[in-house]
Figure (cartoon, rainbow, N blue to C red):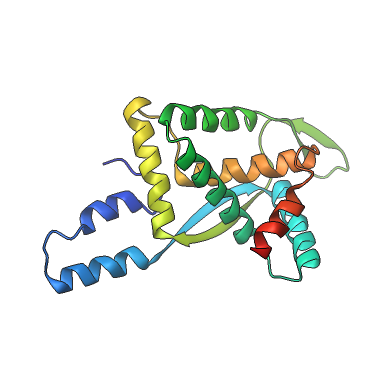
Length: 193
């Protein structure tokens, strides 16, 4: 079976399915389902810094802890909720493909070695790794969604890590362009609930 994340939650789920009705088998399966999943997502450093400023603003306004982990989990849960309302794998594939094409080749500025000038390049600059922890059931939902897409679009190339990166970068890029003006207000409302 194909892996849809480095954690291979779907593969583990299939191998841990309780194949007997004994108490110990069911107990082990429950412990397996409750364990968290850790994903590593590399994002451009400039996007990471902008997201950190957003998180600081949310912390200051809400007087509540709000980290990049919280932000990326919020974006992913919003995506899962959207996918639940629109379960068509074609539609989800088109959405992810549009996010992927929007984050395609961009021009970056890179400082020339031993100089105070910059040069234009299509290669991304520095990256920062985000470590995201989420409940296994949410990772499993994402991987099942990707497996459903695989039936229609073989070798689509999407993974959970890629979805997290696309959602995160798209959100911050839109914020940077002024397209997410109410994002802080919406996050604050979600934190109040």
